[in-house]
Image 1 (cartoon, one colour):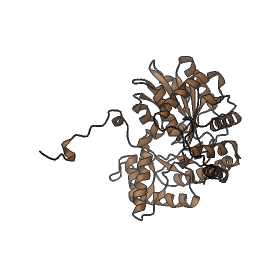
Image 2 (tube, rainbow, N blue to C red):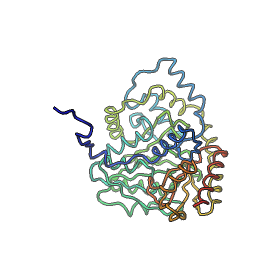
Image 3 (cartoon, rainbow, N blue to C red):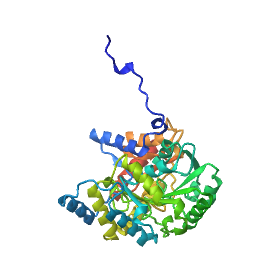
Image 4 (cartoon, one colour):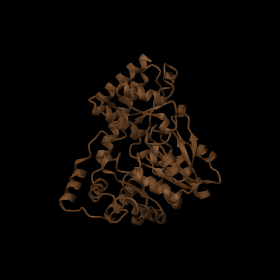
Length: 400
């Protein structure tokens, strides 16, 4: 009788897990952490999270929840108090009229998007996705068995998505259109007119719209807008939001969706068989965020505008780098294609790799976002850190 070894059996994973890739942003975070564990000083332009601390009144609410022993299970989609707070905040800020049963809270915005796509997209369904896209969209669609249909945008027009671009990609198999404005990674902002046109077109053709509004409060164009205000089209629309960026609560993991009750109910059913409810303590903190003072949002927004202008000026000052001016979020998306062909550098991934390994500067390569000529730079940090990172980038590029 022989003893079985690891190589005796072939490891066979499911076909659906092999459809997707490791998150590009998470891979950068892991590699940067590995270097730090070796004592290396890494400047982080990769992290997609605010550098601000969570406002004190939100932290106080979480502490109070612990002290009050609010530590048991809640209903799957969040407490009535939280869902009412989500509905209230959106109504006040965007003139929507959702009801409690049309709201769900989940473990972060990514979780909400995963649930939504799993209940709306079936095998072979097409999902329209503008490029550049947030890294997880394509893989979540593929995991559901859907087919991403990419809408190419024009860098010379700040990557802006128009209704005409979307309409050209619609086919009889189109099931969902994903909008993300302001967008990650390019900070592109759709005009309210184009967003309205897409939603109306989708409603006429029986297509769903998922509007990822994670950065809706970080809009620098002066035209903050949510499709949730379009009450006449709500039967074919799902608004996805998150507290992560708005209130500097990334690690708290609280996202939400607003949409037709049958879709929300289906998302709750899926969530009930996966994670169940968001953390009870975080739900209390979320209520405080949504119901409490909102001045912190505008304070952060103004600081991001200042940091955006600072980093774009710095990037444009580096010979060979070009960069659009983002209209939202907290990312710049510089074009680094002029460095391709220098030595072993052939792609954005090569550029980002060199920046991390040789300059100890973390960025995210554009391949993860659907483009090959860019890297993503997060400017959600101090000007001192921006200076350190820009200096390292300039020196490395000068050496190529």
